[in-house]
Image 1 (cartoon, rainbow, N blue to C red):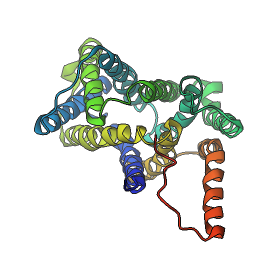
Image 2 (tube, helix red, strand yellow):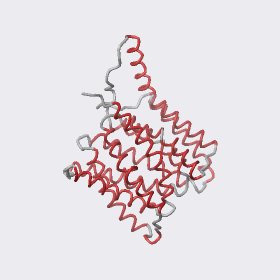
Image 3 (tube, rainbow, N blue to C red):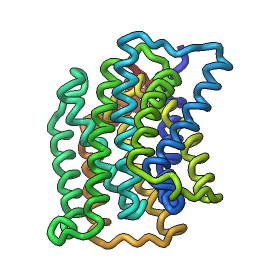
Image 4 (cartoon, helix red, strand yellow):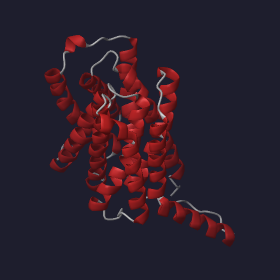
Length: 317
Protein backbone atom coordinates (compact mmCIF):
# COMPACT_ATOMS: atom_id res chain seq x y z
CA UNK A 1 0.00 0.00 0.00
CA UNK A 2 1.36 3.39 -0.97
CA UNK A 3 2.46 5.57 1.94
CA UNK A 4 0.01 8.27 3.01
CA UNK A 5 2.82 10.42 4.34
CA UNK A 6 2.60 13.08 1.56
CA UNK A 7 -1.16 13.38 2.14
CA UNK A 8 -0.64 13.70 5.89
CA UNK A 9 1.94 16.47 5.37
CA UNK A 10 -0.33 18.26 2.88
CA UNK A 11 -3.26 17.98 5.29
CA UNK A 12 -1.26 19.39 8.19
CA UNK A 13 -0.07 22.28 6.02
CA UNK A 14 -3.60 23.02 4.79
CA UNK A 15 -5.24 23.22 8.21
CA UNK A 16 -2.33 25.22 9.62
CA UNK A 17 -2.53 27.85 6.88
CA UNK A 18 -6.32 28.12 6.79
CA UNK A 19 -6.76 28.20 10.55
CA UNK A 20 -3.99 30.77 10.76
CA UNK A 21 -6.14 33.09 8.64
CA UNK A 22 -9.46 32.37 10.38
CA UNK A 23 -8.52 34.49 13.40
CA UNK A 24 -8.41 37.53 11.13
CA UNK A 25 -11.67 36.56 9.40
CA UNK A 26 -13.42 36.22 12.77
CA UNK A 27 -12.17 39.66 13.87
CA UNK A 28 -13.41 41.27 10.64
CA UNK A 29 -16.81 39.58 10.88
CA UNK A 30 -17.33 40.74 14.47
CA UNK A 31 -17.52 44.33 13.27
CA UNK A 32 -20.95 43.53 11.83
CA UNK A 33 -22.23 40.28 13.37
CA UNK A 34 -22.49 39.42 17.06
CA UNK A 35 -20.47 36.43 18.34
CA UNK A 36 -23.10 33.70 18.77
CA UNK A 37 -24.96 34.58 15.57
CA UNK A 38 -21.61 34.62 13.77
CA UNK A 39 -20.81 31.07 14.89
CA UNK A 40 -24.37 29.91 14.13
CA UNK A 41 -24.29 31.26 10.57
CA UNK A 42 -20.81 29.78 10.03
CA UNK A 43 -21.68 26.22 11.02
CA UNK A 44 -25.12 26.29 9.44
CA UNK A 45 -23.50 27.09 6.09
CA UNK A 46 -20.84 24.44 6.68
CA UNK A 47 -23.45 21.80 7.59
CA UNK A 48 -25.44 22.56 4.43
CA UNK A 49 -22.34 22.10 2.27
CA UNK A 50 -21.44 18.82 3.99
CA UNK A 51 -25.02 17.55 3.62
CA UNK A 52 -24.83 18.20 -0.13
CA UNK A 53 -21.50 16.36 -0.29
CA UNK A 54 -23.00 13.32 1.41
CA UNK A 55 -26.04 13.46 -0.86
CA UNK A 56 -23.87 13.54 -4.00
CA UNK A 57 -21.88 10.59 -2.67
CA UNK A 58 -25.08 8.68 -1.96
CA UNK A 59 -24.31 8.38 1.76
CA UNK A 60 -26.41 8.97 4.86
CA UNK A 61 -25.50 9.74 8.44
CA UNK A 62 -25.69 6.80 10.81
CA UNK A 63 -27.62 7.92 13.88
CA UNK A 64 -27.09 4.80 15.98
CA UNK A 65 -26.84 5.44 19.71
CA UNK A 66 -23.05 5.30 20.01
CA UNK A 67 -22.65 7.71 17.08
CA UNK A 68 -25.13 10.16 18.56
CA UNK A 69 -23.04 10.34 21.73
CA UNK A 70 -19.96 11.25 19.68
CA UNK A 71 -21.92 13.84 17.67
CA UNK A 72 -23.25 15.38 20.89
CA UNK A 73 -19.75 15.66 22.39
CA UNK A 74 -18.49 17.29 19.20
CA UNK A 75 -21.49 19.61 19.01
CA UNK A 76 -20.99 20.91 22.54
CA UNK A 77 -17.24 20.75 23.13
CA UNK A 78 -15.75 21.22 19.68
CA UNK A 79 -18.14 23.37 17.63
CA UNK A 80 -20.59 25.37 19.75
CA UNK A 81 -19.21 26.37 23.16
CA UNK A 82 -15.49 26.69 22.20
CA UNK A 83 -16.21 28.79 19.12
CA UNK A 84 -18.64 31.04 20.98
CA UNK A 85 -15.83 31.64 23.49
CA UNK A 86 -13.35 32.38 20.68
CA UNK A 87 -15.70 34.84 18.93
CA UNK A 88 -16.66 36.47 22.22
CA UNK A 89 -13.04 36.70 23.32
CA UNK A 90 -11.91 38.36 20.09
CA UNK A 91 -14.16 41.31 20.91
CA UNK A 92 -11.65 42.26 23.60
CA UNK A 93 -8.27 41.19 22.22
CA UNK A 94 -6.51 41.15 18.86
CA UNK A 95 -6.61 38.21 16.49
CA UNK A 96 -2.85 37.64 16.84
CA UNK A 97 -2.98 37.43 20.64
CA UNK A 98 -6.00 35.13 20.46
CA UNK A 99 -4.10 32.72 18.21
CA UNK A 100 -1.08 32.78 20.53
CA UNK A 101 -3.24 31.89 23.52
CA UNK A 102 -4.81 29.06 21.54
CA UNK A 103 -1.30 27.68 21.10
CA UNK A 104 -1.77 26.15 24.57
CA UNK A 105 -3.95 23.57 22.81
CA UNK A 106 -1.19 20.91 22.47
CA UNK A 107 -0.56 21.02 26.22
CA UNK A 108 -4.23 20.48 26.98
CA UNK A 109 -4.31 17.58 24.52
CA UNK A 110 -1.18 16.07 26.09
CA UNK A 111 -2.74 16.10 29.54
CA UNK A 112 -6.09 14.63 28.44
CA UNK A 113 -4.30 12.07 26.24
CA UNK A 114 -2.30 10.83 29.22
CA UNK A 115 -5.46 9.89 31.09
CA UNK A 116 -7.68 8.70 28.23
CA UNK A 117 -5.38 7.38 25.46
CA UNK A 118 -3.19 4.50 26.66
CA UNK A 119 -0.71 4.84 23.79
CA UNK A 120 -0.08 8.56 24.35
CA UNK A 121 1.21 8.80 27.92
CA UNK A 122 3.07 11.78 29.32
CA UNK A 123 6.87 11.50 29.49
CA UNK A 124 9.63 13.79 30.76
CA UNK A 125 9.69 15.73 27.47
CA UNK A 126 5.93 16.28 27.47
CA UNK A 127 5.87 17.32 31.13
CA UNK A 128 8.78 19.71 30.67
CA UNK A 129 7.30 21.20 27.52
CA UNK A 130 3.90 21.60 29.17
CA UNK A 131 5.38 23.40 32.17
CA UNK A 132 7.37 25.70 29.88
CA UNK A 133 4.25 26.43 27.84
CA UNK A 134 2.17 27.29 30.90
CA UNK A 135 4.99 29.54 32.11
CA UNK A 136 4.74 31.34 28.78
CA UNK A 137 1.00 31.80 29.27
CA UNK A 138 1.64 33.29 32.70
CA UNK A 139 4.06 35.76 31.11
CA UNK A 140 1.40 36.77 28.57
CA UNK A 141 -1.29 37.08 31.25
CA UNK A 142 0.88 38.65 33.95
CA UNK A 143 -0.04 42.33 33.52
CA UNK A 144 -3.72 41.54 33.04
CA UNK A 145 -3.77 39.29 36.11
CA UNK A 146 -2.23 41.99 38.28
CA UNK A 147 -4.18 44.98 36.95
CA UNK A 148 -7.46 43.43 35.80
CA UNK A 149 -7.41 45.11 32.39
CA UNK A 150 -10.29 44.92 29.94
CA UNK A 151 -8.55 42.29 27.85
CA UNK A 152 -8.44 39.69 30.60
CA UNK A 153 -11.97 38.22 30.02
CA UNK A 154 -11.21 37.76 26.32
CA UNK A 155 -7.90 36.09 27.05
CA UNK A 156 -9.49 33.76 29.59
CA UNK A 157 -12.22 32.85 27.10
CA UNK A 158 -9.66 31.75 24.51
CA UNK A 159 -7.80 29.56 27.02
CA UNK A 160 -11.07 27.96 28.20
CA UNK A 161 -11.89 27.25 24.56
CA UNK A 162 -8.64 25.28 24.22
CA UNK A 163 -9.57 23.16 27.24
CA UNK A 164 -12.96 22.27 25.75
CA UNK A 165 -11.54 21.52 22.31
CA UNK A 166 -8.69 19.48 23.75
CA UNK A 167 -11.15 17.35 25.70
CA UNK A 168 -13.28 16.87 22.58
CA UNK A 169 -10.29 15.87 20.45
CA UNK A 170 -9.25 13.14 22.85
CA UNK A 171 -12.80 11.80 23.26
CA UNK A 172 -13.19 11.57 19.49
CA UNK A 173 -9.78 9.93 19.12
CA UNK A 174 -10.83 7.32 21.69
CA UNK A 175 -14.39 6.59 20.57
CA UNK A 176 -14.92 7.58 16.92
CA UNK A 177 -12.46 5.51 14.89
CA UNK A 178 -15.34 3.87 13.00
CA UNK A 179 -16.98 7.13 11.81
CA UNK A 180 -15.81 8.59 8.46
CA UNK A 181 -14.44 12.18 8.67
CA UNK A 182 -17.25 13.84 6.67
CA UNK A 183 -19.91 12.05 8.73
CA UNK A 184 -18.11 12.96 11.95
CA UNK A 185 -17.92 16.63 11.00
CA UNK A 186 -21.51 16.91 9.79
CA UNK A 187 -22.94 15.03 12.78
CA UNK A 188 -21.12 17.31 15.21
CA UNK A 189 -22.15 20.44 13.35
CA UNK A 190 -25.82 19.42 13.21
CA UNK A 191 -25.83 19.04 16.99
CA UNK A 192 -23.99 22.33 17.41
CA UNK A 193 -26.31 24.46 15.28
CA UNK A 194 -29.31 23.47 17.40
CA UNK A 195 -27.46 24.70 20.49
CA UNK A 196 -26.11 27.78 18.71
CA UNK A 197 -29.42 29.06 17.35
CA UNK A 198 -31.07 28.65 20.75
CA UNK A 199 -28.19 30.55 22.35
CA UNK A 200 -28.22 33.23 19.66
CA UNK A 201 -31.90 34.12 19.92
CA UNK A 202 -31.77 33.87 23.72
CA UNK A 203 -28.61 35.89 24.33
CA UNK A 204 -28.34 38.33 21.42
CA UNK A 205 -30.44 40.81 19.46
CA UNK A 206 -30.99 39.80 15.83
CA UNK A 207 -31.79 43.40 14.86
CA UNK A 208 -28.26 44.41 15.84
CA UNK A 209 -26.78 42.40 12.97
CA UNK A 210 -25.45 44.22 9.91
CA UNK A 211 -25.07 42.15 6.75
CA UNK A 212 -22.43 43.95 4.70
CA UNK A 213 -19.71 42.64 2.42
CA UNK A 214 -17.30 42.14 5.33
CA UNK A 215 -19.67 40.06 7.44
CA UNK A 216 -20.97 37.99 4.52
CA UNK A 217 -17.46 37.38 3.22
CA UNK A 218 -16.31 36.37 6.70
CA UNK A 219 -19.19 33.89 7.13
CA UNK A 220 -18.63 32.35 3.69
CA UNK A 221 -14.88 31.99 4.16
CA UNK A 222 -15.20 30.59 7.69
CA UNK A 223 -18.05 28.28 6.72
CA UNK A 224 -16.32 26.80 3.68
CA UNK A 225 -12.53 26.85 4.10
CA UNK A 226 -12.45 27.42 7.86
CA UNK A 227 -14.99 24.69 8.67
CA UNK A 228 -15.76 22.24 5.86
CA UNK A 229 -12.24 21.86 4.48
CA UNK A 230 -10.33 22.05 7.74
CA UNK A 231 -12.49 19.86 9.95
CA UNK A 232 -12.89 17.08 7.36
CA UNK A 233 -9.10 17.05 6.88
CA UNK A 234 -8.60 17.35 10.65
CA UNK A 235 -10.65 14.26 11.49
CA UNK A 236 -9.08 12.37 8.57
CA UNK A 237 -5.67 13.13 10.07
CA UNK A 238 -6.83 12.20 13.57
CA UNK A 239 -7.23 8.59 12.41
CA UNK A 240 -3.62 8.54 11.19
CA UNK A 241 -1.47 10.51 13.63
CA UNK A 242 -1.21 10.95 17.40
CA UNK A 243 -3.64 13.45 18.91
CA UNK A 244 -0.75 15.47 20.34
CA UNK A 245 1.10 15.53 17.01
CA UNK A 246 -2.04 16.79 15.26
CA UNK A 247 -2.49 19.52 17.86
CA UNK A 248 0.94 20.88 16.86
CA UNK A 249 -0.76 22.80 14.07
CA UNK A 250 -1.20 25.36 16.85
CA UNK A 251 2.53 26.02 16.42
CA UNK A 252 2.01 27.41 12.91
CA UNK A 253 -1.29 29.28 13.18
CA UNK A 254 -0.12 32.03 15.58
CA UNK A 255 2.72 33.00 13.26
CA UNK A 256 0.41 33.57 10.31
CA UNK A 257 -2.30 35.14 12.49
CA UNK A 258 0.11 37.68 13.99
CA UNK A 259 1.46 38.61 10.56
CA UNK A 260 -2.03 39.07 9.08
CA UNK A 261 -3.26 41.01 12.11
CA UNK A 262 -0.31 43.39 11.91
CA UNK A 263 -0.60 43.90 8.13
CA UNK A 264 -4.37 44.24 7.79
CA UNK A 265 -5.65 45.40 11.20
CA UNK A 266 -2.58 47.28 12.51
CA UNK A 267 -2.48 45.07 15.61
CA UNK A 268 0.60 45.57 17.78
CA UNK A 269 1.93 43.07 20.33
CA UNK A 270 4.33 44.14 23.06
CA UNK A 271 7.62 42.48 23.96
CA UNK A 272 6.08 40.62 26.92
CA UNK A 273 3.60 38.88 24.63
CA UNK A 274 6.34 37.96 22.16
CA UNK A 275 8.44 36.54 25.02
CA UNK A 276 5.52 34.51 26.33
CA UNK A 277 4.65 33.28 22.85
CA UNK A 278 8.25 32.16 22.31
CA UNK A 279 8.06 30.16 25.55
CA UNK A 280 4.79 28.55 24.47
CA UNK A 281 6.14 27.56 21.06
CA UNK A 282 9.41 26.30 22.55
CA UNK A 283 7.37 24.28 25.02
CA UNK A 284 5.55 22.59 22.14
CA UNK A 285 8.88 21.61 20.59
CA UNK A 286 10.21 20.29 23.91
CA UNK A 287 6.99 18.34 24.53
CA UNK A 288 7.63 16.44 21.31
CA UNK A 289 11.37 16.15 21.87
CA UNK A 290 11.43 12.38 22.32
CA UNK A 291 9.49 11.77 19.11
CA UNK A 292 11.69 14.21 17.18
CA UNK A 293 14.87 12.62 18.51
CA UNK A 294 13.55 9.16 17.73
CA UNK A 295 12.78 10.10 14.14
CA UNK A 296 16.19 11.76 13.74
CA UNK A 297 17.95 8.65 15.09
CA UNK A 298 16.07 6.38 12.69
CA UNK A 299 17.07 8.51 9.71
CA UNK A 300 20.70 8.65 10.94
CA UNK A 301 20.91 4.86 11.23
CA UNK A 302 19.40 4.43 7.77
CA UNK A 303 21.91 6.90 6.33
CA UNK A 304 24.98 5.18 7.81
CA UNK A 305 23.62 1.75 6.87
CA UNK A 306 23.24 2.92 3.29
CA UNK A 307 19.53 2.11 3.27
CA UNK A 308 16.95 4.11 1.45
CA UNK A 309 14.17 5.28 3.78
CA UNK A 310 11.06 3.22 3.23
CA UNK A 311 7.47 4.30 3.67
CA UNK A 312 6.94 6.14 6.96
CA UNK A 313 4.49 4.15 9.01
CA UNK A 314 5.12 5.84 12.34
CA UNK A 315 2.08 8.08 11.95
CA UNK A 316 -0.33 5.32 11.09
CA UNK A 317 -2.74 3.81 13.56
